[in-house]
Image 1 (tube, one colour):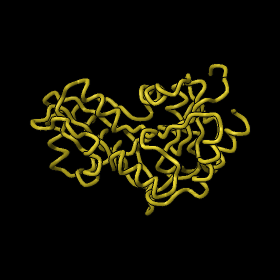
Image 2 (tube, rainbow, N blue to C red; image 1 turned 180 degrees about the vertical axis):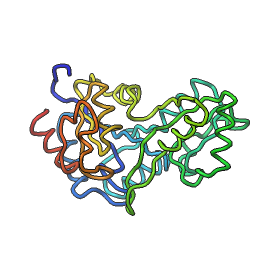
Image 3 (cartoon, helix red, strand yellow; image 1 turned 180 degrees about the horizontal axis):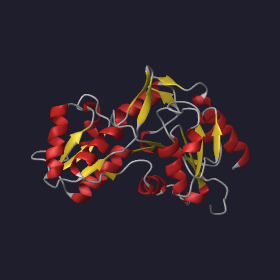
Image 4 (cartoon, rainbow, N blue to C red; image 1 turned 90 degrees about the vertical axis):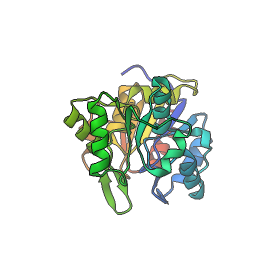
Length: 259
């Protein structure tokens, strides 16, 4: 890894790191306030596709996080940008609550498939429609390929198994736009006036948050909240720069050792 400089930017995952559904991780609000008093830029980066950015922002404000809507960078934003670049008409397999972020995108007579986390749409009929479109040449765009995520009632399947099923059935290869893709992290850092070597990522997903960040040149801190399971830190190479109990502990380390 390149020689480190003082950290100038911190990227923070949301679901599983700062909150789980409508409950904040204990101490996360105060830890974020302490981080904001330091000379670092902060951005919140998420693969969440269950809800649009506005709804996510309102959820975080209700949980009393000090956050601005323009500080949130989502995989939905990255997916929309790709659709606009490719000028395609997507079959959108996302939750209804996320559709607001695709307002203005033409979806009639679709010639592309976009798949996120959409439990209400993961049925045989809809998946078969996607399957047939891909066989006819439609590109498959995965907002992300997470294996699972954390809900209040336990772990739940993410979109990854459904994306992989479509790849298997069609011999197609999905274009992934969210974490852990390097382009996602580079776009998140674009307006933060720093290099990857001057940034750190905090998240609960060893592969998508930490592995993706470290493969892009950032430091990665894995927290043992959310979807974390014992031994996750051994599933990526290189292993996380740091594994700690929670977001407040990650902030403690940054303030004491990286600034």
